[in-house]
Image 1 (tube, rainbow, N blue to C red):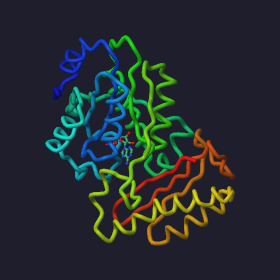
Image 2: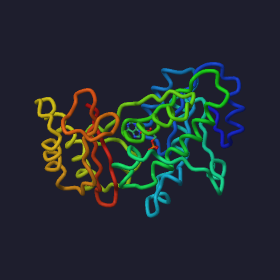
Image 3: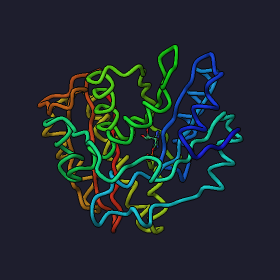
Length: 278
Ligand code: AMP
């Protein structure tokens, strides 16, 4: 595995890659969720590139940018063992100029749910992902495959839209959510949780399980499902529960094969999100 810190080095290293590249952008503090993306990229491509960059523009004022977990040495080992070919770890100065041209998330899909709770977050996400996709797909003869988790469902949807709207030479590959054996969706932010909070955090996945059980019983009314979920989530602070179709439009009834049920909660000081695709 080669570790590169500059765009020039990255493009030099990939110059002779003739075949397919799978790209996995991350913010580091890698866990099994990230690893599943890397493994999928490994099986579907000849070369795998992972980036680690804690992107400042997607953190809002007062969010956890300064304390976001950084585990560079452990991450390098994980990537090495997972058979990553190139690990790209750029600096902030490498990625941003002072007076930048900005990308803005679309008016509806970008400003509901996560977009309304974290105004400006998706602008920063789209900005950095656009840069990374352009850097890695530069001069490639074939479409770059980029791997993103369904854990961040709205992000995945917006990135897919950006690739379409900007005609990027990239295929976005959605990847399933990886969970702990107790159901908790893996997240770099889970390290913030105390033992007691961890137990409370399990209610997110339990609420989604409850929703999927109702769907299996053919109880498809969104309001009823949301009420039942609220009951399961009574020990945490709910930010939103939403039932949307794949275009992120709220729907009053679950449509099998075209629904995402999402939940965002605060457990202590930690904000957690989870979802289920139905
Ligand atoms: P992050 O480092 O949090 O920016 O995440 C990098 C990528 O890993 C994103 O595409 C996430 O959606 C994905 N990811 C994070 N957690 C999980 C998980 N538990 N299961 C699957 N993908 C995940």
